[in-house]
Image 1: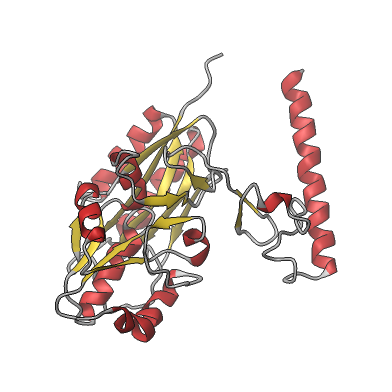
Image 2: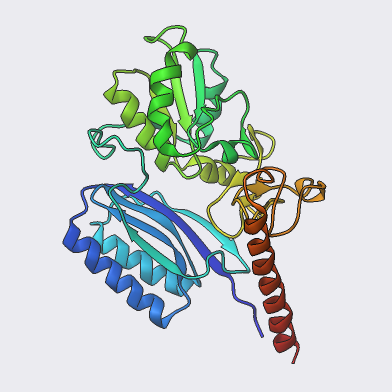
Length: 310
């Protein structure tokens, strides 16, 4: 029997999205999921759409055609990847205030944002001595891979980024008028919103990497690649390597942080129960609960393996 190949599509777009259309699109997508093997996470808000979907190619085509109709065929900033396994359990659709939460309602990325820089020009820009490079992702994402010499704001979530800008950005700027500010993220959405914030605050020469790290790794040869490490993704794969294949990281199911193969060899590590990052964060009762959960997971795996063999 031929094994399935799943097509994984990451997408986002900032545009005025009417509530009636949001609810209608959500219902139609759930109908498709009900009859097909469609999974992923989509976020809808009045400012646009954001998310990742996973299915076989023919189902992906149906979904993208539908989304195109509801978004008036706007640029969805699509990144494509493939996997032999599903990277989500099911389809989740969330309706929120923002498609990526920053908490600054007065900005409008669909009308006011920085200059897109494609992958080839990105290398030239970040090598320029008059450029500072800012990673707009969370600290745990930065820890497993980033661009050479980029600034790590060390945020736990994107909503902390505006405070970092207020408290620290000026310290990195020798000259506000001539310094280039280049920002990047996984797929382009966070750095695009970050450029809108900086423009609102009066900063100049603001740029963001079009399509983010995922598009950059897809388009730039290994010889020219300035990204070091792996790229964190918000699905079962955890991180992608330079070839956009599943990387070497997994998730600690106690704290949700990415852990490397080396981390799993540390004495603190107990699968599904704790890692070196969270050993002091949970009580003994918590760990007993995690242990029982892990036993159930292991038991199910054994049972499923027996069924598959039979």
